[in-house]
Amino acid sequence: MVTLMARLNLVIIGAQKSASTFLQNCLKEHPEIYLPKYETPYFEDPDYHNSVPLDQLIEDRAEKVVGIKRPSYLCLSEVPERIWNDLPNAKLIVVLRNPVDRLISSYFHQIKYGTFPPVEFELGVNDIINQGPLSRRYPRSREIINFGYYGAGLSRYDKFIKNDQMLILFHSEILNDPLHELKKCFSFLNVRTDFIPKLLKSRPQKVVYSIQRLKWLCKRNRFLHDYNEDLTRLSVKSMSWFDYAVVAFITALDRYCLSLFFSNEKPSIDKKLRKLLIDIYAEDIKLLEEMTDRDLSEWTC
Image (cartoon, rainbow, N blue to C red; front, side, top):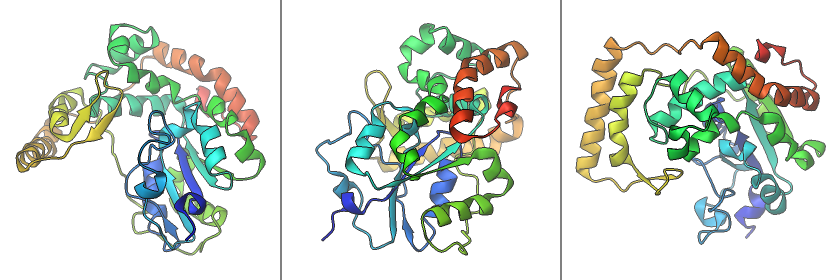
C-alpha cells in the first residue's frame, strides 16, 4: 500500500484570516479531493515528527488529491524545509489578504480563542507593536503582526515557486468571484473544473468585533479548550455534558440577545495607527510585488 506521506499532494499554507477555511470547505466538497475537517499542525514545532505519524492523523484515501491545511505554515520559518523534505512533489495553495485588514481580523480572532485579552483594538495593537505588558504576557499575540509578512514567508518556499508547485490567490478576488478562484484551484490540482460547491456562498469563522460580546464569549474557552502554561497552544477538551450545556447557553445568549444590542461593525482605525501599520509592512509588500509581479499599491493606502 502506498503510504499517506507519499499520497499527500496538497498543502494549504495560509495566510491566516484570509479565507483559507472557506477554500478548505469548498475544495473538500469536490469528489476528487480529500481534506480533513480540521487543521493539521504536524509541520510546526513541537508537532513535527512527534509520536503520532502523519499517516495516522489522516486516514488513507482513494481521492486523486489528498491534502491538509494550516494557515500558520506560510510565515513559520521552520515549516518550508520540512514540507520540502517530506512532500517535495506536493502542490501548495496560499491566499493573501491586505495585511492591515488581516491584522484586524486576527486581533479579534485571538481574543475569541483566549490568546489575547478583550481590550479595545488600538490599545491592544499599540501594546503589541511596542512589546508592552500585554504582549509579554500573551506571547502568541506577536503572530497578529508577524503573520502579515507574506513576502518573507513566501521567499522561504522558493523551491515550490520555481517548480510551479504553488498557486497564489488573493482574498479580494475570492470575495468578488469565488467560483472563478475555485476553478483556478481545480485546474491547478488537475481535477474536474465544472464542479460547483454547495458552500460557495458560505462565510466560515465570521469575525466578532464587539469587545462587549467577546468578553462574554470568552467565558466558553475554559469549557472548550485546554491551554499550555504561556497560552501559546490550545487543544480541544474532552467535554462533559455540563461543558456542552454551558457552551450552548453562552453561545445562545450572545446570538439571540447580545448581538441585538452591540454593533458588530469592523472598527475604524485612527489614521496615525493605520499609517504606522502600513509602514510596518511596506518593505514586505514591495518584496511581494516583485515575487508575484502584481501591483499591490491598494494595500498601502
